[in-house]
Image (cartoon, rainbow, N blue to C red):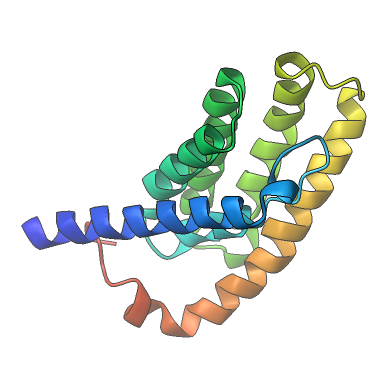
Length: 164
């Protein structure tokens, strides 16, 4: 039992670290009203392991902190990623649906943060469109490619953590 808890924490920490590194590497794409946050491709990982849920949340939280985000973005942007990860885990029995929760959560929450937190002058519908399209590309297209690429390796990469 202790080994499973350690494995769970290690997997979550590794996912958080990868998320932060991807945001930092693609910094200019990760923030703003037109975003293309490559790190969001990792939101398909709850399909493989429940440890991805806290890993993605902590990774997003740290990335937003390190990226100089305002408190509202740190809180609500990270919450959007958490909601997406929880939804992806809930839909893990349906591969094609796994990317939908992070797409929906970020498409609805991030434009509100941009408008009311950062005062971005663009309209909310326009930001819903820009954030939504980037989430569809990153999570829905690239994320599904990653999911299908990792699926044959899941028992080698994602050994069981906490009974999953």
